[in-house]
Image (tube, rainbow, N blue to C red; front, side, top):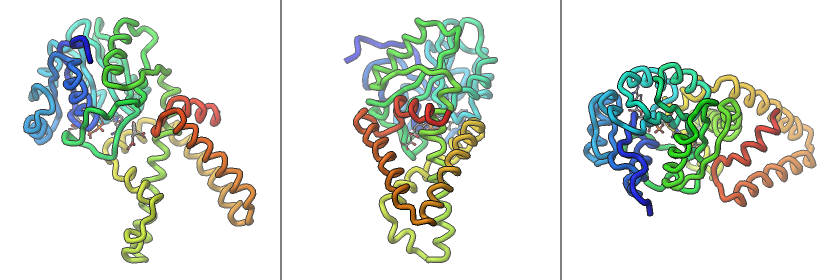
Length: 310
Ligand SMILES: NC(=O)c1ccc[n+]([C@@H]2O[C@H](COP(=O)([O-])OP(=O)(O)OC[C@H]3O[C@@H](n4cnc5c(N)ncnc54)[C@H](O)[C@@H]3O)[C@@H](O)[C@H]2O)c1
Ligand SMILES: O=C(O)C(=O)C[C@]1(C(=O)O)C=C[C@@H](O)C=C1
């Protein structure tokens, strides 16, 4: 149990899966004396009020951040800069400003210039999520035993980094630190390109469905079902991820295409030995992830993956 709140007033900007889960985890653990939330759409704010997602839903971002000692930007990465510009004049001196965006360098570039002197900007990214979005999708245990990567800037105040880390740990996550460009490369391998592949595969099947009527749905096997779960993820969030992690995504996608051609050739040539060796290697990666206690993108796996693509 917590020994009292870590923050007095937490302002959540955006009230979807991640902000909602943070609010529920913080309130369950008594980690914040008060959690205030704001989302752009009145519909989302009404839903958040109706389900009591936060202690108070306010009608402007400025009102939410006033007097907050922690401000969390939990909006799609393409909206981070505009939100930062809107709240900047209202941030309290000494406040910690963080974000939960899936891409880090572009968020730093977009938010950084708006951060006033005396406010501690510490970018972050919880490696936890689902295909669901919106204010009803959050749950308190989302971050348990997951990684939460922080990408502090060279001049980030160590005490502020430690305070934010304490909150993250109290929500059940493990903290690791990374440089933003490295984060973006690792996540391109472990999360972004896999999502793009899932979106593509489901798109291919959808085109095929028009030929085979409903067979694709009726006989949908486990592998394809896993793809459809991923491909049901929020379109706005993922559009922004690809537009803002463009270089790393294109790099990894190029390597993916090269590998795919090698496997395609092995199938054409009947090279079973190559296929078997390849699949044995990939199985070892899966087992490594399970042994590390992670069934999601783990930094150790990510580091190995990033090293392999250098
Ligand atoms: N979903 C995941 O699996 C996951 C995991 C880790 C990190 N993230 C990142 O967390 C962030 C939020 O994702 P989510 O899954 O909670 O999304 P979500 O769609 O569930 O919620 C986004 C919220 O932001 C609000 N919003 C959008 N534009 C806004 C604006 N300009 N001003 C104020 N509010 C605005 C929406 O109304 C909504 O309440 C994204 O940057 C995403 O990349 C997502
Ligand atoms: O489990 C899922 O549904 C997710 O896609 C979560 C996932 C991931 O790729 O692991 C998606 C995006 C985030 O930035 C972090 C986590």
